[in-house]
Image (cartoon, rainbow, N blue to C red; front, side, top):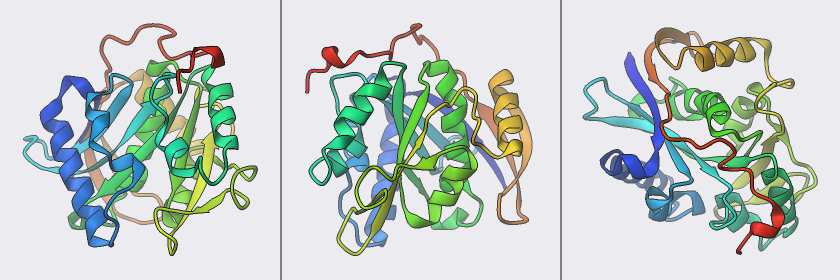
Length: 247
């Protein structure tokens, strides 16, 4: 199969954001989840939110994607909204990491049509780490479903056992489990799989490229056309000191 993956500030392509929101909501409804913090529509108007879209080459169809919501001191990260009432340590942890720039990889989803191709669970996750360098954020948070933890760990995330019950929470409902993970150094990627370090480094050097990718933990191959250039990012835009927080 052939796909395009592109990244952009949410406020610059509202049409694509609406397709993302519609697709994500549909996927959640099929598994009996009506609402999660990362699926709220307000992110599309947040200049600190960046979308990662997996789409057809003609841009008519969105197959999945993810987002990076960057901590800006104004809007809580989805992981704060999701887990803060269960363990308020998340607030101080996010604020501390935001001094060097932090964000959350969230809203991962893909259609059943491309299940098994790693579209939402893996390739969008990898791209989230790729664009962290352009955003100037050093760390990346995520709240993972059980089947996505292995993908997050592959790119260098570790389970934050200091939160919840050894890193886990019942979320988004009582019979579903989510795991809090953190990539502490998205620039050096010291805890990532060696192949991922190589692939992410190459994508950072060549933000526009077409590549044949092998789906991890499987034998499928996909052709992906990448366009990961983020425009109008201000240096140190997302380095936020704790005293600047307004919530």
